[in-house]
Image 1 (tube, one colour):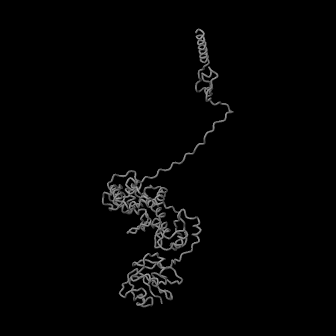
Image 2 (cartoon, rainbow, N blue to C red):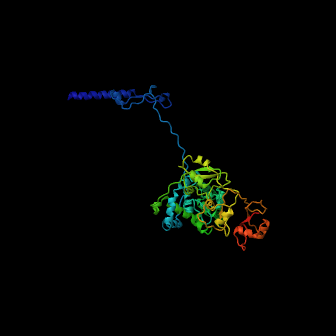
Image 3 (spheres, one colour):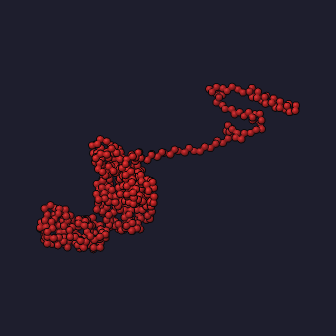
Length: 469
């Protein structure tokens, strides 16, 4: 027992001596301004000095120059932040008219609205991408939902056409070609770009998406007058007045209701939707008039399939005398289409031949006989589904092997054309007797040529065929 006590006393003495020596050798640290403070001395831990055999698992790195520096990962450049997508409506008001249209689409018009939703995915991705690239809210795409039900072939009684229901004047103003041969308001690609620019211009003018949508429906002039008369640019206040028509008052609530359903259709009972696949096309330019049938063959599809992608073509060929016209080609079409397109023959359209307007008593047989054109070709060229003609309907007359001179709105004596005719447009003061005397023919021959009765009254603007002598 005494020996054990002596052992503990010896160990304690050793520990005490070691502590006293450490305290004796400890120095007061120099002030921070001293140059000695800049040198860092590495000291061993207390236990390492007492028990030299102990080792630390992670020793401090040595300051020796022989030690290789620790490699550091390269700095990753910061990605530019995408600008936030514009918001169409920051808040949707709790207006009863919105719920009214939600109920209407959900219950009263469920079947038709379901067709619109299923068709929406054909062009919705492209429309949203176009609006996003132009800095517009993507939700503006649903304007097409209430305008046309996302149908490129839609045509209203007032003359509006296409996905965006452009009127002729507005479409032409925004770069769309509209004539007897082509109606680019029905081109989903070109019309979407024009609609985006039009909506952007309306927003720049009124600084309000509600007023911009109202102007899209009623015209910017009417909206500007309403804002001036009432003295407010708040659409929800304006719609409570009589400054807008009933259609314009309900246009924005109708659009909001359709948008809400389209973005979450299951919430409103549209759970069994079979969306159409997206239509992905690329555009090719042609610089001459080409028959639609030849274009369809070049794409390895039927004419009806071709018109699904190109509803803008409304005749049997692309327009003559156009420097260029775009054709929508499916993105997965064969790569050789561009080469085949360059080799397509020019159509038989004669741009110098005027369009014939159907008059009273005309028939397809009499028109074909008058212009010396096979009846079958006349029907095919005009893509007629019925042989019943409407009064003042326009027909294009295809070229044949024999060329006949055709003039419009001319009162000059025309050169003699054997077995030909002259197209004369009726002006104020014309009569059958004066025409017969002017063109050196007889009233009886004019009546026979045009299948007219003697009691016919000529109307200004009508076309009449005069036999040439």
